[in-house]
Image (cartoon, rainbow, N blue to C red; front, side, top):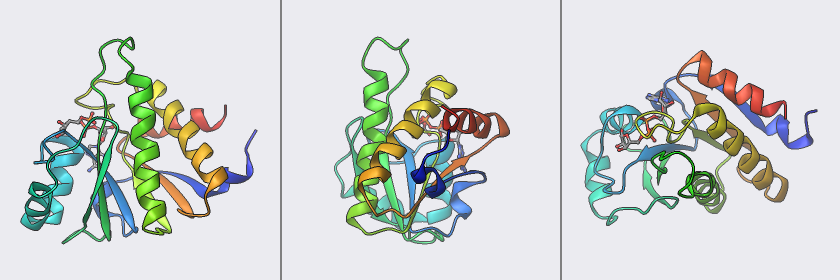
Length: 173
Ligand code: APR
């Protein structure tokens, strides 16, 4: 059963570095000095100025988020957040992932972003089960949008049909 806020949630299959949105979220690591996956793609597309900006941030703790400009990206801002590494679910991974979505959405609201795009945080190298992660992402997005006019739209930018399907299934709950 869809809810009024669901009209503000969009699920797409795309390379997040191509999205001309106000903010894209990066699934970073605590150093904020780049890596592989979506982190590597964002740094590659943004250019060296992004790494220079990240060096000044002093790292980031799991569940927290830090903001930089988008530099050569079509997105205006990059919100760097650090997801939990999956260890089986008994070490607070669900709550840490939820905190990543909340912290990033708070960043977007503070910058009065119209649109913010998320990758499927922690579901790659960090091994978080993708269906479980998608349920957390949708739950946190709905909860935030119910209480905030900004961002006007959240895009779940999935990198595969399987990832998109997990988010679509989560929207049906
Ligand atoms: N656009 C959108 N999504 C992408 C892109 C892209 N260009 N590239 C990868 N993804 C997807 C992956 O398919 C996965 O669904 O992003 C999701 C997150 O995967 P990772 O990038 O591996 O991130 P994560 O699992 O959070 O691991 C973070 O990996 O790259 C390193 O520095 C990073 O140490 C950190 C760790």
